[in-house]
Length: 447
Image (tube, rainbow, N blue to C red):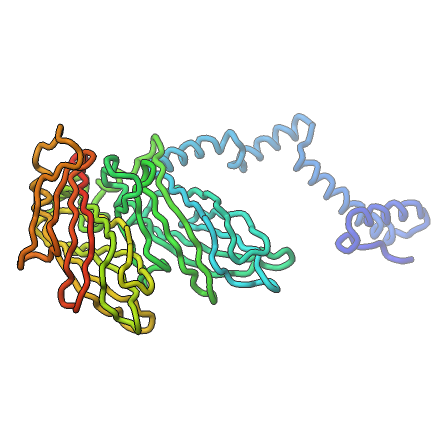
């Protein structure tokens, strides 16, 4: 007589059927009967265990089960609730605020399918992970998805990972990048409500230590600080991702101010504006007097540094601060019309201006330099000019051997602000001039 099927091979239902069939054979010997009863006992035992797991309705077993269940039950809603409340309080105690990340688009991403990719972006910070939607068959996708991270430690770098979505295999990697939010948070510490919309507060230059593919700008825009960036993807043949970030304060959190007051690690310099703890500076030489907005309008008759022309850009420096314009290709009379912003701590420092020709495969060529003094501008700022008609000239500066003025420079009162127009003659070069427009921005409301 064939032996009954093993439950481990055919399952409980097969064992039950075999047991039922063998019970009908009354002439079987004891050994056969025991073999027939074994799968039935096994099956009944499993049924009882399953029944007990679901709950035995008998009062005694129910009481025993409840006593045992309560002693091994840390995950019910009632028992977990106090722990969750405690955790929430702890989170708010450490939470500084939220970082909103607008993942705008990808640029020239790698191909991971036959002729294209189905890319999406994952953003990670510590144990947090958020991601965009998938854009099908596109190596220049536009997501415009807003992701949110809770910030407890701003020193933790934020990782950006790009993947190609696959249906029947693991998603392919399409590169990664990272960025730090500390320069962005430095701008958050400043009182900027009086700034004109679009004022550039800080610029972060690409280098070997970061993933920026071009200059990243922290800007005062529509009443908040935002940072635009284009990240160059690593560990992949090509590709960039464009982002914009801004900060959101959360009521009940410890806030950004607590982190600033918390000390030393964040006391650093951003565009020459020194901050340490809750005070703006440790001495009067470090105190922020205000912001100088420099509009680089245009260049005139600049020197030739390539075959027939040049690719000029302007670098402006004051002390340790350094900002620059974009490059204008093949033009000796370039029009930049670009606003640069400097934090003024020490007005006695001259502002130096250098013009360069951008070269791809060698060092950039010099195209002359100049400098100017902002103390005449500040002397007008200290005057009481309220009530004067807009456009009135308050002070006039003339060219001398001691300055770089190519013609008279006028300091005027325009629309409630002190401004100065000037044209600088470039030195240490055969020819060339640069036209500027200066505007003083008062930050006296800064705490």
